[in-house]
Image (cartoon, rainbow, N blue to C red; front, side, top):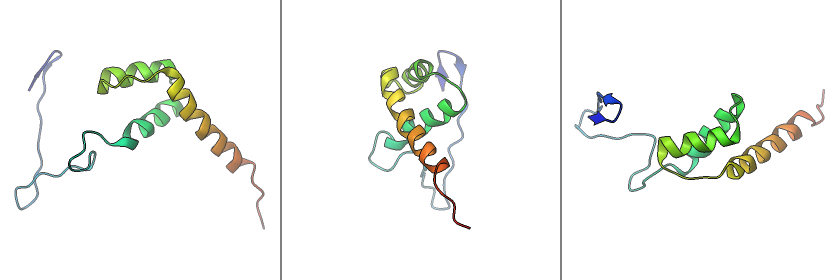
Length: 91
């Protein structure tokens, strides 16, 4: 496959029935709804800013989201982590 960055060589794996299945996107769907969310959270954990996350998602997936969208996602996760850290432990 030719891309704007050069040749891209793809290996398509098939099962024993010569059928292709892939785990990223369910059949008859165009995208995995949770994929962008998980990717954004992993990038945030690595220290990537929300503006950089939005920019990267736009270029990788042609999916426009504002930095505020990713800020809202990371805020929810941060609140869950804080609640987990502050829970009481029973001996």
